Image (tube, rainbow, N blue to C red; front, side, top):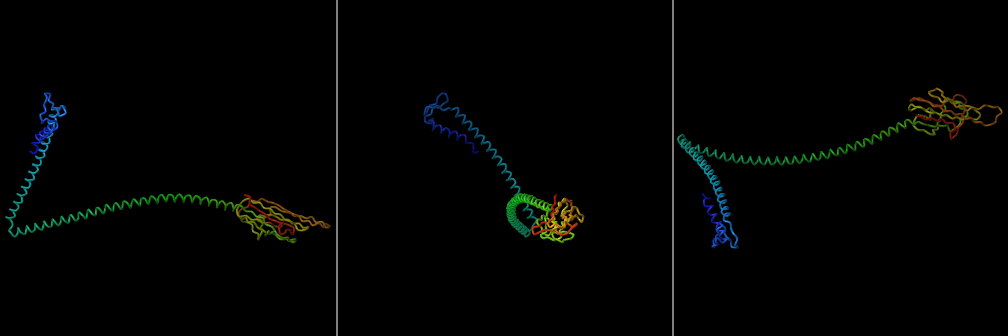
Length: 332
C-alpha cells in the first residue's frame, strides 16, 4: 500500500538531517556511552532519538491501519455498488429479451416512443416541479416579508395604543381635576345662591307727607335698601321667600297736632303697634310732631305676608329724605 515505505523514508530523512546538523555524516566519533558530539562539542543522546523514531513508526503504523480499514470499507461499498449495477443490467437485459419475445417490431417501436414520451413528460414535470418550487419559495419569502411587515405594523400600532393609553390616562386625570374644580365651583355657586336666598333685607320709606290720610295699608314706595327678594314697593307688602325667623321695624311721624296708630300685620293679624300720640290742648299754639316706633320678631313660613296697617288716627309726616319708614330682614 501507499504507506509501506513511509517509516523508511522518514528514518532516512531524519538521519540525513542529523548528519547535516551534527556532523555525523562527516566522521564525528561515537562514544561508548551512546552519545554523539556535535560541532560545538555537545553530546547528542541516541536513546532519545531512537525513542522518537519508535514513536513515529508507531504513529505511522496507526495511520496505515486506519487507512487500510478505510480503503477496505470503500472497496466493500464499491463492490456492493458494482453488484447492484450488475443486477440492474441483468434485469434490463431480461426485460428487453422478454419484450423482444412478446412484442413485434412495430409494437416495440411504439413502446419505445411511449417510453420516450413518458421520459419527456417526466422532464417537463420536473421542470414544472422546479417552477412550482421556485414559486412556493417566493411565496414563502413574501409571507415572511409580510409577516415582518405585519409584525412591525402591529408593533407600531401597539406603541401607538400605549401612547394613546398614557395620553388617555393623562386626559382622564386632567378631566378629574377639572371635574373636581368644577364641582367645587358649582358647590361655591350653590352656597352663594343658598346664602343669597337666605339673606333677605329691606328698608323702604315715604318721601312726602299726607295730613289727612286715613287709608288701610300704608305703602312705602321708596326703597332705600334691598337684599334678596320679598318686598313689593307697589303694595307695601313683604312676602317671605323662605321660611325662617324675621325682624320687622316701623317708624311713623304724626302730622302737626295729630295722632296715628300703625300695626305690623302678619297675614292680616296685628302683632305690634307703633303710636304717635298728640294730646290736644285748645289754647296750645306749639307745633308738635310725635314719633311712634315698634319692632317685632316673627317666624315666617314661605309665602307668609307682612305689612303695615293703620289702626287708628289720621295723617303722617315725611319728606324727601324719609322720616316714616318700614324695615325688615331675615335673622336666620
